[in-house]
Length: 209
Image 1 (cartoon, one colour):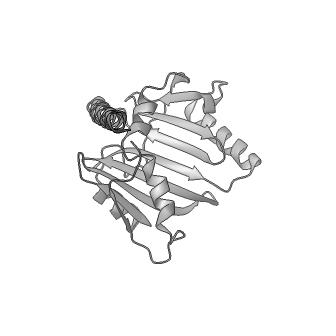
Image 2 (image 1 turned 120 degrees about the vertical axis):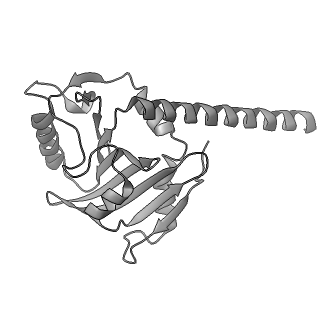
Image 3 (image 1 turned 180 degrees about the vertical axis):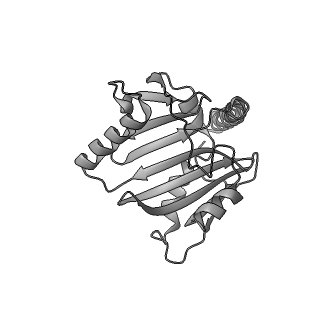
């Protein structure tokens, strides 16, 4: 189920990544929605209910259109669009946030914002500690938990996942039940099609070799 099936449009001439390979590698992770299916069904994190609302910005909440985001943030570095099978789009930005070089992805299904992602690639261990402390202060209501081991929800079931690996990721997901069901259905259908394709290829090899 690998391979990029949508279209990449680079909008900024001074893009940090003139080679399409970077964007292909980046967007392949999301191309068949397995990434989101895995997040929805994740059971290896402690869940925590936060009193803080989870949104992108005051002007942009989950469910906002790509036009609303473009009006607020301006032209992105790159757009990935997949219209086949389902209407899926990613706006990719690079900017400084709190003095840190940051990549930001905003994901849309049927032109509704359902996921966004901050990626910090050039932060020190001390910077990571400070980011974790900041997020804990904001979302954990004073509880002494490790936010990198939690799935933090708000009252609308929107949630945050913090991942500290080679890069530092802060992932935000819309808790809209209708959209989650749609993602699961699309992925399950794609998985069935792919399994059938593998089976047919095996049969062809078995019969002819």
